[in-house]
Every structure is written in structure tokens, then in C-alpha cells.
Length: 201
Image (cartoon, rainbow, N blue to C red; front, side, top):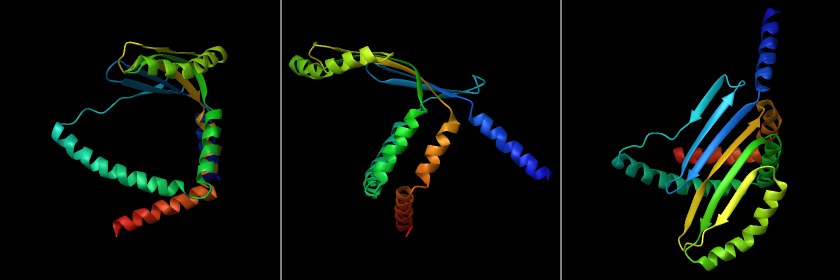
């Protein structure tokens, strides 16, 4: 009897912990080489994790890895396209993403960018399309999003992005289970398993 009580208490504790919000803060700065950082904060700030890029490897090792990654990338694209052809998977994936996005709360979003093309006329045409969108976003969105043109005659993308989002992990359980055990996903997993099995032969 005590085993059942312990397991029930453990299940309640895990459920309560999953109800605690998870905050994600990300920053991106583009001025030459892009620089990005992200921090995850959980349990009201008691736990935090900085996600940083790994230390760069020597040039020789990177060259070997790049060749291997290029082969893996080509193979990965091929199998991804094959899996995405699974009947109903694209629709199921779209529904899954929509359900996830409903539970993500954007607490703060600030974006300031300057964009320019080699030909100022092309920049003008680009912003003839972007300007109405920019105005609509600025008017209807509570967040600060600004994109300015640069007519210097150089192709540039400069600016910075800051965002803070919050979600409760427990709210992702139903969408994840629904997607994982849907018929299109199971068919796609079968294709992946068969592909891995053929590679080992």
C-alpha cells in the first residue's frame, strides 16, 4: 500500500513541478558576425542555464567534420523529404505547431534592424513591400519591432533582437502525446526505422 502512496505522491510532485513556468530569454546582435545567446530560467529563478556555442576546434578537425557534415546533411535532406511525404504528416505537424504556439506567451520582444541591398532601387522596392507590414505590426503589436532601409549601396543586415517568452511544460504534454501517437507520425517513425536498418546492412 505504501508503494502506491509513494508513487502517487511522486506523480503529484512531478505534475506540480511541470506546472511551474519556464522562461527563455534570447539575444541576437548582427553587426558583421552574428552573436547570439540564450538563457533558460525555471522554478522562479532558482535554476538557470546559459546556452552557449561550443569552443571552436582546430582548423584540421573542422575541415574533416565539415566534409562529414556535408555528407550527413545531404543524406538527412533526402530522408527528411521522404518522411515528409508520409500521408497526413504535414497537416499533423502544422496542427502540432499551432497548439504549441498557443501556449507560448511572449513577455517582451524588441527588434531593431537596418537592411540594405547593393542597388538602392532594389532596397526601395523591398521596402515598398515591407513598409505596410512594418506599419501594421507596429500598430497592432504591443512589442517594439522596427526595420529601417539603408540606401548606402551595400548589402547589409545590422541590428539586434531581444526576446523573453514563457511557457508551462505541463501544457505541452497533450500536444506532444497527440502528435507522437498519431497515425501519420507512427508511419513516419516506421520509415525512419527502416531507413536506419537498411544503412546498417
